[in-house]
Amino acid sequence: MKASDLFVKILEKNGVETIYGVPGEENLDLLDSIGKSNIELILTRNEQTAVFMAANYGRYTGKAWVALATLGPWATNMMTGVAYAQLGWMPVILITGQKPQNRSKQWKFQIIDVVSMMRPVTKASASIVSGARIPYMLENAFQMAEEEKPGAVCLELPEDIAAEEVAEEFACIDLNTAKKRRPIPDEKAIQSIITELEQAKHPMILVGAGANRKLISKYLTEFITQHNIPFFNSQMGKWVVDERLDQCLWTAALTSWDTIHEAIAKADLIVSVGYDVVEKPTDVLGFHGTKVIDINFYSTDHDYMYSPYLDIIGDIGNVFWQLCESDIDDSGWDFEEVYAINRNNKQKMLDAAKDEQDFSYMMPRKLCSDLRATLWEKDILALDNGLYKVWIARNYPAYYPNTVLLDNALATMWAGYATAMEAKRLNPDRNVVCVTGDGGLVMNLWDLETIVRLWIDMVLVVLNNSSYGMIKWKQTGGWFDTYGLDFWNPDFIQLAESFWARGFRVEDKNDFQPTLEKAMWMKWLTLIDLRFEYPEDGEVY
Image (cartoon, rainbow, N blue to C red; front, side, top):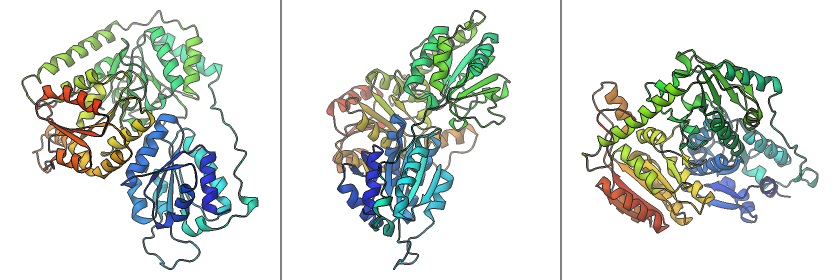
């Protein structure tokens, strides 16, 4: 059997239905094998987009999907997407090509050490040096990418290895891979949580990205409502628990001086669920000496910003199932002051929104309210990265899991609409809207063609203020002169039309909601060029 055919059969055996990527000449044997299989190849216009899409499949399903590129610059182009997947706990398998290993006519042309380059931003990176090793290396790659904590694994497949014949005795397609079950905390560990909860007066729950699993969401929500215990989210834990619940204290969107910090500071015990320090910790966790119990699939890293008093390692869903089944004495809990602060914060948000009424152009608070008023409960909002993400993370409530998709780990620009592309592919019956800054869109706009070619209907809302808004906000907040962050934009309507998309320009904020409704109804790629500005007071609430 040809090695590339064996490679593809192992992918099929692991359930892979789609590969995203930009093939090169070093992938031709593999590309031929994919073409003869049941696996769909989605050709993207940029290798980063391929990784973003594969990673977001992993975010939704927990299964590793595949991104493909070849050697040299094509492999280096993947790097931002790889780091995005690794820091965001998204399982993905990366396949890169390489010149022949045994005899090459081109010597070192385009050759860099891709395997070593990938190691710092993956869970593992290796080159396949023999077709006989393909079954075991691929099986181990899937296992490693999907086990806690999930991430990226890179395999390099040189073109001479892909083309070689593999002896039948080594072409093991049906490997006896062991099924694995996550460990669950024992009775003593659960009792230690209960003891700490019963001794506390003002406990609180922090919801992190690792809690984004169906069973965790179910039992965590049950525990919160059962005991009326307040909770807040990291930005990446935003979509786990319904934010319409009275117990929701909003999202911790900033490290310091956040509106929510006053409420968090009242806690004498914080139960941290699926949280990782890569999610940008709130300094309240470190500086107030509050006890923190960390519940996660793996042990946490400790530092002065985040140092839990107790680590509970194991299946988070099982932990909260056990807690829901336990008799916990919550009679000593008092949340009156915390919920009063929360009511005051919500009123501050409403009052702040009034400050935007004197402006004809869109500002962040009305943007949040218009988006929430227009999108249905299970519609999906994907965000690129910019200052607007902070406002939306706090002021746009998520009702169901995976309905607000953002990245606050690598926090890279231009990942937003690739996230939206995959979200729409996986949820064809839902509306998908992506909000991106003008800077982020132009960084990688070529995959607008991919969206149209794949008939993905989604809406791109481009916040047009002709500057890098987040950095400019930091610049002015630090009392620096504004310098070096303004630019000119193309005509986004003509740009959209050049990619066979539709475009609308919105200058007046009151025209945005009806335009968004019309764009969603069109069921085609539609771009809304929205004039947008941030408040001059610098306040983010």
